[in-house]
Amino acid sequence: MTTIHHDAQPNNECLEGPSASVPVKAVIFDMDGVLVDSEPIYFEIERSSFAHFGAPMTEEEHHTYVGVTLESMWRQVLDRHQLSNTIEEALSYHRKNVMQTMIAHEGLVAIDGLERWLDWLQEKGIPVAVASSSPRALIDLIMEKTGLGRYFDIRITGEEVLQGKPAPDIFLYAAEQLGIAPAHCIVIEDSRNGVQAAKSAGMQCIGFHNPGSGRQDLSRADRRILSYDDLWAIKENLPFDEQLLAKSKGRNVPEGIPPV
Image (cartoon, rainbow, N blue to C red; front, side, top):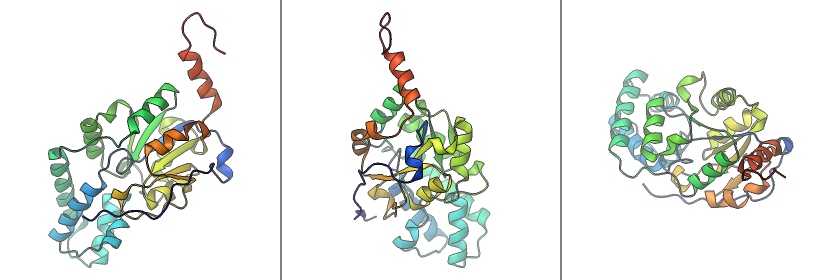
């Protein structure tokens, strides 16, 4: 599949809007295209599944499905292309196709710079969660294959909520599991649907421009980045809760030396 380069530039200005002054107490990550560069793999799997059911697919239409649940995608595909197959048939075939491919895939690794960022969040005592439209089995598989599972005890899937992205349900449920009010969460997303879901949940959002995710409109995000190096460079300017950071400073002070 041809790689699509984005015209948009990263937005390195301060977070804007009414939520900008609200301290951040947790970070919620999308998975595909944010933790692991898996969207190009999915695109190829999906194209093979679309061809299997006789659905001609343009790149433009295909990119509209980034970030939505499999069920939502296939309901739209079956309807748009007037296919006679049932949603159960489509989902059964496609899920098997995805799992077989991803189990065999040797190139699943965390996106460059991500683990340094996760280590920093862990050091600062800032809780994290992954909230992905992907099925539970796939989330767990990717967590295991990339080694990212050690960071994410809280893993929310689109299967657990009534409505998938762009509805806010998945992020609201992630905040509930974290025990933190939505306004105090910041989301990292690579898709238009995901950004819309985060903003509808009343959360701040960082849009991650990943060329592998296709041409995504991330304009509603409070800030836009091209890499985790961009995020690392501005981490001190993000509105993290001062009490959390102060506690982490206290934990890192050598024994016998009182915290400042």
